[in-house]
Every structure is written in C-alpha cells, then in structure tokens.
Image (cartoon, rainbow, N blue to C red; front, top):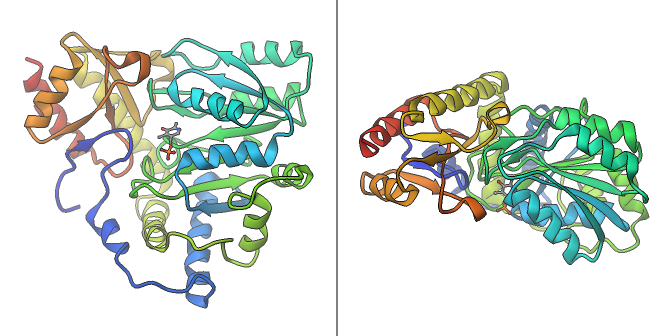
Length: 357
Ligand SMILES: *Cc1c(COP(=O)(O)O)cnc(C)c1O
C-alpha cells in the first residue's frame, strides 16, 4: 500500500491504486475463453467469501438493483420487511413500488432486529409470507443484525418462506455463512467491504430461490435469475458485463481470499471497530446499541456539532461520512471497512483527536 487512505466514508470506500490499475486492461469479448477464465477465477473465490457451494452471480448494477431483482424473482404476493434504519427501509419502499402486500417489523434506529419479536410475528401471521427481508449491517446506524439467529427463526416458524439478505456493508468485513445459515439470496454491491469502485454487485442464490423464480411467470429480462443461472452454468453472464470491474474484482478476491485471508480480514475489521470506539470516547458516544455495534462502520454522536468536525477534518484532507436520515443533524459516520489499514485509521484518529480539542 503506497499511501495511507484519507477517505473514511462508509461507501464508496477507498480503493487501492493497484486495484484501480486493473480496470485499465484491454477489452476482451465476453463470449471468449479469456472471459471464461476470468469468470471462473472470480466465482472460485466468491464461494468461500459467501461460504457457499451453491450459485454465485456477478450482476452489473449497484446493490439497489439486486434488491429489486431479489423481490421480483422470489415474491409472488406477500413479504415481511424488517427495518432498523434507512437501508432496511429501502426494502420496504422497493417492495411497495412493485405492488406487493408488505408488512413490516420495525425496531427504533440504533437497535438490532429482535429474534423473539420476529418469532412472535411469524407465529401470529394470518397469511403466508413468500419472503422476509433483512439488512445484515445497517449502514445508517452502524448496527449488525444477527442473521444466523434471525434466519433460524424463519426456518423454524415458516420453512418455505425465503430469506433475503442485504449484505452490502458486511460482506468481506463481517462473516457471512450462506449455506450454514440457510439463506436464499444474499448480495453486496462492491463499493463497501470489497473496496472496489461502484458499479457491480455480487450475489449468492439458493436452489430454493431458483425454484421460486421458476414459478414466477414474469420476472423481467435484465435481472432474471434463471438467465443468470443458465449462463453461469456455461461460465458466462446474460448481457455484456462491466469488464473493467471483472478485472478489478478478480484481483481483489485473490488478494482477500488468498493473500490477507478471510479470518485475518474479519479480525482486522473487529480491531478497527474497537480502536474507533476507544479513541473517540472522550468526545463522542457510539450511537448504536453497543452489543450490536458494527465492525465496518461507526455512527458517532459527538458533543460538538458533527458538521463542524467533518468540515475541520476536510480542511486537514480527511473525508468522513455524514449522519443519515433522522440522525443527520446529530451524528457523523466513520467507515472502517474494505482496505483501510489499522495504521491509516490511527493516523486519521490522531487528527480527529486534535480537531475535537
Ligand atoms: C450502500 C448500501 C446500499 C445501497 O447500495 P447501492 O450499491 O448504492 O445501490 C444498500 N444497503 C446497504 C446496507 C448499504 O450500505
């Protein structure tokens, strides 16, 4: 790593120069042996990243497109949306825009979804849900939901309901165990924990989700998971992919899985969270429930005005994230995810320490 990162926004995140460089490689046809090799290399590493033996897709779209696709492919009529902040709310808005019957299970901002409340809701439901949506890491509040436990509740209470998980700001920073947790769709756009420029999304899709998609008469064309599946079986994608992203993703996944290693990467993220909590406690409170505080992003409620702090940091060359939605005026956010190093985080916190004195 040439220079220390100065960009601490919780998405898009700082991208290493050598990854940016990969994006300048010459074009190849996407129906060629060269692309097959690239596709194969990417998917071989996506499987350990999601911890799955099943299908993994690379979709040329930001994460929001794949949220819509997940609902389109899997939901016939009714969906339960769990919300704990702005990004989980996005599931609700998309489901409504698609004309589904949408129920919601809300917890206040800063809290995690409670498995017992979910169990009660599923037990007392009057109608069958085709799917339940979750947000693994709520980026607006810095809360990580316990997907293992929540998915187990769905499997127990409503075995044929699909579990759809937004892992945009957790994947590659916080462990995901797609097969063991029995998830049906899990996805992440690449500009957060994967530390690539924005533009594509990676996803894991279960056989059960594919079976549901087969029963949906109209799934659209661009995001049709059955087309993704039949093309993937042939080491390809349905339409022209963002090839520069494929090059960058291939190198980044090699580096994550084979050079740093997943366990070391998750450990680095937990360490960055702990350092952030400890080194900001003089001038700010962690806005989220501590027990569920995220390893990839911290929302901080400072004594001073968050805008003043961010502006002062900007003048020193450091970019921090603003507060989000109803927490906009009272918080700022530090993204400690992706390829941010512990040294870079400490160097930024040194300056934050001066600015808050
Ligand atoms: C950033 C983010 C999104 C939005 O993803 P896009 O790639 O911008 O569409 C969705 N969910 C979460 C949890 C996010 O952090």
